[in-house]
Amino acid sequence: MNSSIDEITLLHQAQARATAHHMVVRGIGEEIDLEIGPGDDDPTFSSTTLVVVPTHESVTPDDQDDHKQILLASQVPTDDQSQLVKAPQGKRKKKVVKKWREEWADTYKWAYVDMHEGTARIFCSVCREYGRKHRRNPYGNEGSRNMQMSALEEHNNSLLHKEALRLQTASKDKVLPVVDRPVYVKVLRRDPHEVEFMQSVQEVVHSLEPVLLKNSHYVHILERLLEPERAVFFRVPWVDDRGEPHVNRGFRVQFSQVLGPCRGGLRFHPSMNLSIAKFLGFEQTLKNALSPYKFGGAGGGSDFDPKGKSETEIMRFCQSFMDELYKYLGPDQDLPAEDMGVGPREMGYLFGQYRRLTGHFQGSFTGPKIFWSGSSLRTEATGYGLVFFARLILAEMNKELKGLRCAVSGSGKIAMHVLEKLHSCGAIPITISADSKGYLLDEDGFDYMKITLIRDIKLQQKSLREYLKPNPRAKYFEDAKPWCERCDIAFPCASQNEIDQADAIALVNSGCRVLVEGSNMPCTPQAIDILRKAKVLVAPAKAASAGGVAVGELELSHECNLMQGSSEGFDAKLQVFEAKLQETMKQMYERSVKAASEYNYLKDNPEALVHGGNICAFLNIAHAMIDQGCV
Image (cartoon, rainbow, N blue to C red; front, side):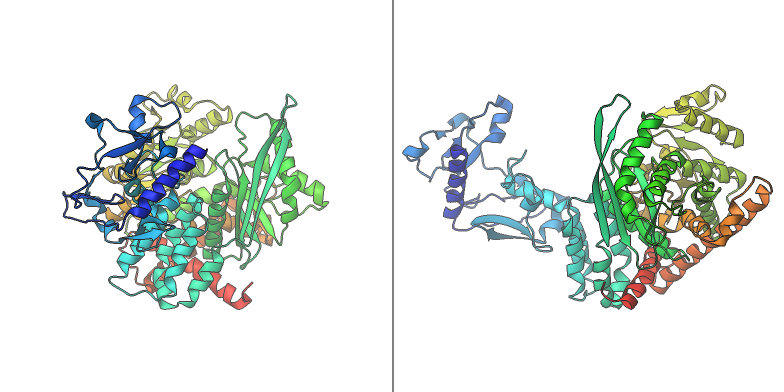
């Protein structure tokens, strides 16, 4: 420990002796110097003897160079520094010089050098931060022989810097009000480790730029909105069938109740964390605000994985989960719904424990089991709504779904009902995913018989390869995604960020012209850039996947009786349900188009629906927040 402190002290002394630190920026292809202390312009550097500090831990010869700390020989070793040895002349460590890379050219225009706590650092002039803020090692030399370049590169790859740089670049054409700039960086700096939430916020903030420029008062509204009203994080202990105890984490983020009681899904998946809970709650808040109904937004769940668990294990977990969560639920407070990993079985166990703890049979949980709560057509709502929204988009293009090839990802409730409704509309659904392990391709399309077969296979928890036995013309692709298949419309219905840059390129090359988001935030920022440049029209999940919001309103009204009861007259009930669902999707589409046009996003803009949906949802929330005061 003392030895490490001595080495750090020597580093600081070397940096303190440096009278000036300069960064020489030359033309593309030339060399630049980012080292601390004298550089190539110093004629004495070439004759300076380098001294190395040997490490005390065992390292391999290949790694040894990377673990050395380089000091100038002008620091004459004292008795306390007797362990310093001169490096052999044959292996003298030359000054590390990096090539000027073309893709970094714009970045360095915003860099400057300043002293921080006695150390020369390269700062970003946009967000006034240096690379050390984004590294675990405070000295920036993890896996790099040039700590300043490495730290700056990592900083420039951060979401914080990219957003700040984009705003700085945009300011060349138009001057942003002074009050606008802090809110962007402040939001991104608040929770830098919450990647999913930050990505969601960035997409929305980008859409809201013209709104904030037109009325700077909305900046303060946005800042309040981006902080959840309530976030609950709790322990969920449970016991398996062998009597062994386990513990998982539970989350519930009630993002906003300004428009009404919260409504949002519960997700049971190993990847679940607070960032995803906040992201889901934020997206649900905007989705509900865009709808014609009065709901707030929430999201949550647990990192518990129902797969491979017995019925009794799932029941014990759900009961333990509800033991804590019930305090924050109620018909006028929060209405949980299904999400990934939470189906009718899990919702039944959750509601049973909730009823036991509260002593009330409040139909405040949503699900298809009509004997305790919900609509018998809830599972169809989101999937059918996606197809109805796609038809609205195609109608604007003077096209129809009939005969179009459609690629669908996911194999859950939403994806299966998308297949079902696409087939009934005359489209040709050709793909379906297999729980991130691969996808199934049927060039002839999935009809009702084939969809029923897939449901049976999933119910028996078998591989989708079983589908190939009665359908030899079909193909199963292991560890792959369906986006390389020739298609006209894509329906990503699996999870967030399922489409990356390579997938987006594959989609464009496959002929896809419309992407309808079934899952929240299915595209990475890099994928969105590719789709925008290729003019692929994107239908946002906030509008396209709001079918569940529509049926949720029916559940809380007298019209829910239309969806419940015996199976007699089911066709008539289905027609009423679909008519109301289509009307809701039409309103969502028209609201998005109107808001986009009001802020100069033209119809030929492939992201017009994305921006319009974000703007309309935000303004609905903002007006309510203004009316209710700063609470």
